[in-house]
Length: 262
Image (cartoon, rainbow, N blue to C red; front, top):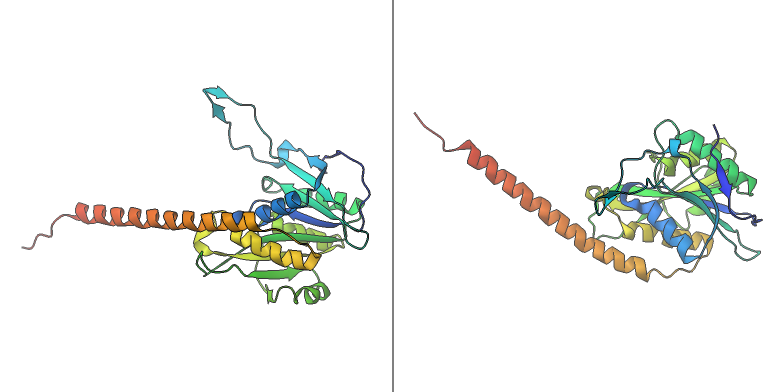
């Protein structure tokens, strides 16, 4: 079962690298690669629209009226660079595929990328650790081949020696290796208690490392401002949780009633 990929333009890319991202913990990967392809003004290349690969959770209602069903958007974008540099091919997916179809999606996307000359795949992910949300987000790396990992350590000293990377952000690298490609994943640290909260600080840390690897000059002011706003939102979130817990503890004490001694 192959995914139908519809080309929007015909382009020849120079030794392209594939940078692929889907939603995950802290939206670290998706936020980073969407920011990057927008900053580089990447152009639309192709899109994937396969309803059976995705779960449609429900419908939207506005002003009392049911809105048309919107399918998750998944697409390829490209950015041409100088002759001495690799062109960049982005894949951005709005939603993780339904269970059991991940491998088919990954192999189809990689076969398409291979037809464009891609030999190296780059993904990103979150690395939950025991930091707090004001601490710097350090970046870890893992790769498909030991030689590539050695080449990356000058840019990223923390190596993920054991563990798992869930979802398509991890699976894509495993399938890439199976198909004879090489690749690596950059993992930005996030606090354990913020896995469901967007973490632009971790995305920015990933992009700083990736920028050094690829020789990119990026303006992070937008992400820096967003990271500061997110820190305040997390403060408010934690305060609400603390107040809610105090109220629940008080209600539990009140329900116990006075202790009667005979």
